[in-house]
Structures are given as C-alpha cells and as structure tokens.
Length: 73
Image (cartoon, rainbow, N blue to C red; front, top):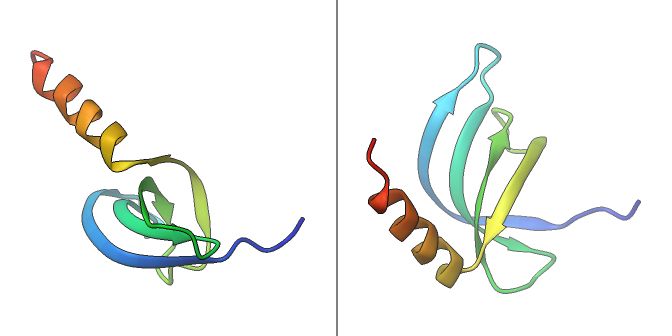
C-alpha cells in the first residue's frame, strides 16, 4: 500500500483522550497535497499514527453542525 501524505494545517479541538495518550481531534488536514478538509479521528501523541476517522468538506461540516444543533441533548 502506498504511503499516505498528510499535513495538519490547523488543530481545531480535542474531544477526548485515551489512557494511552491517543486523542480524538478535529483538524484541518491536507491529504496527498490536496485542498485541506475537516477531519475527525484518533491520533497518537506524535501525530505519526492514526485511527480510522471521517473527513468532511466545509459544506458537510456545516450540515453536521446543523444536525447537531437540532438535537435535543
């Protein structure tokens, strides 16, 4: 499998941290030199290893925000 190139352009927030130090973060990331997208996933302390996550465009993130705001939590 070819290497995936990524660059974290901006860390927007941390949602949680595991006992092993991995953090679930929302970041703005450029994958393989493409335009940055919003990304939510677990990262190790050094940001070299990552867990499975979800990548969203700005439009998708806005729709997600609307959905979350409409929920009665």
